[in-house]
Image (cartoon, rainbow, N blue to C red):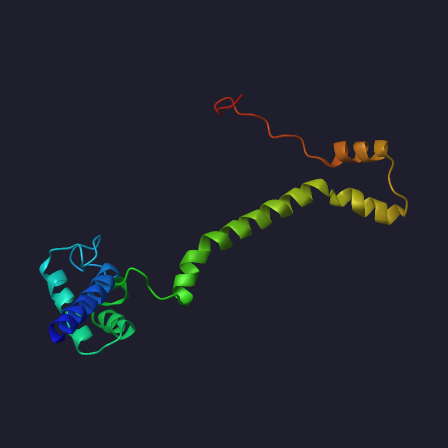
Length: 152
């Protein structure tokens, strides 16, 4: 009975160690977990993890120790903090700013300030023909095309 309990305890330790090892990056390989790597440092880290488990440490304490000793990059799932949030959210922020600029420019194109000002000064809205005449007068002519510029 005692031998069976001992085998069960070793299996539990082994399963926990493998689970932790799959979430820790090999500092020598970089692209493999220490569970998959055969580098010397990976073998030492696997032994360290098993020793820590036998010493009664929790998974969270083991991850914390590895992070303190080897830096945050040793973990495949880094903690979520302000810097990480900035990195992940920066494309959304830049896209939002670009969309805002695009929408503002589209709005400016549709709203001719000169006609609005003339309406305010006159107090009477312009007729469609007057608007067309004003737009013809106030819209600058297109830039002349250069003979060397592509897209004629």
